[in-house]
Image (cartoon, rainbow, N blue to C red; front, side, top):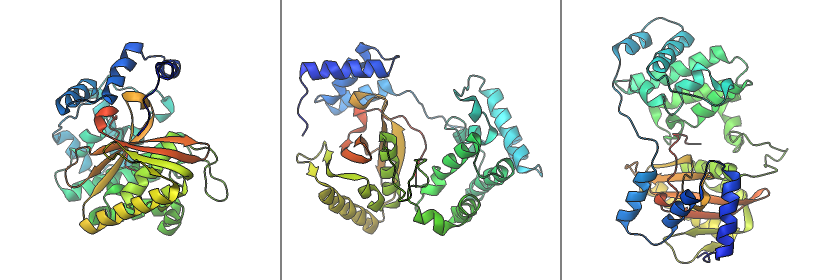
Length: 336
């Protein structure tokens, strides 16, 4: 396990966090740091509840919205009217980037998306809504995502639930339609495992500089695909994989590869569904860093969180932790 930092090391880390996050206070960091100390389950749940900022909301179908969806209006007009209706009911909604103020992006934003899909009463309507979003995108973005709004829409739809449902049959026609439109064909998409990360690629399709977000995206894809080959390729030879529930860490790329490959094969054999959600830590010593929320089985409660350390173009450390340690921010983004 990691050694306990000295007071000097802890102070240096605190100063680093304060310099990188102007809105933080020393008191917040001290409170978050407590999450890393031994705590009872009740204490952990209490802290997690106190830090939670995004509350799930239950929405019901709106007759006016359903009439729009059932109308003969063009796809772009349908989505625009639905977005306008939602914005009218949510006047406090804001986007820091004005270039993203586009109906296609707002519709799939984590604040509006639950309301939008609440308009669906059954599986067919759900699939139909994804098809409608794609049809509107084809009209809005004939350049297939060359604009910022277009790229953001593609990122949202690639990271959406439908892509991550491990071959859920009803959504496949929409998925294939999207892949053909955006990538030309599914084969080229499958052969470029990091084409969807947004990383700068060289001729070997390897990022020249790796960030925690890149590492998190690669691992989320591995988890959602139950295929760790591309993720393992990004590990440093002396990488360390550690779980807070296991006393001895795994050291070395080969050992980590054997463990993850075996684990994923066992999950495949069990038939359990898995989900890896991109997120950001809102507490603990990884505050503000990208992480992956890992879920396994039918219950969608969070099982664990993976955080990363990178060095140059390689991942040098992976830590599997209790979600309460980092209070991950839900995003609804599930890379595949």
